[in-house]
Amino acid sequence: QSLSRSAGRNLHRVFANLMYTDDPLLLCCGAARTARMVLCWEWCVGKVGLWMANPIKRTIGVHVDWTGVSFLVCSAVAWVPRAKAVKAIAQITDAKESRLSLADYRKLLGRLANYVFVLSLSPRMMAGLWSVLKGSWDPGAEVALTPFMEEKLDAWMGFLTTVAAVTA
Image (cartoon, rainbow, N blue to C red):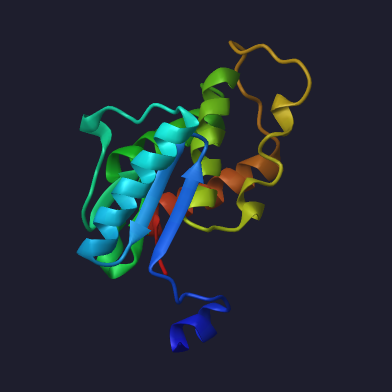
């Protein structure tokens, strides 16, 4: 109850279903609930006519990777894996040095927007970064950043190089 009070939201649940585009993340407490959750998920997917991911991509347990972020559920910790952080840092560096195409910049922003969603970061971290992609644009052209955009990407560099993790 104290955790709910400090978080400012109800955390008295034993099941959660998060979804980012077509990637679901189902969380629950206990072996019996886990078995029921899997059966319910299979039933729901079958009723709607969706295809489940290949078995190799399915994960069950206390550690899971989901949409480019790792979760250790028993400790309520989520983090950007080193390889993903290094790739984003390299792309940010390329963007700041005008060596990143607009197509690759768009992919970078998709990755960063995903981190905002999954890690419950402030949406303000993305403010102004999409402006060069408004209207029609040439995917092969190099990105030209404004000083405000560079400031925002510097903030992302700081996050990815120092923290890149959150706790519940």
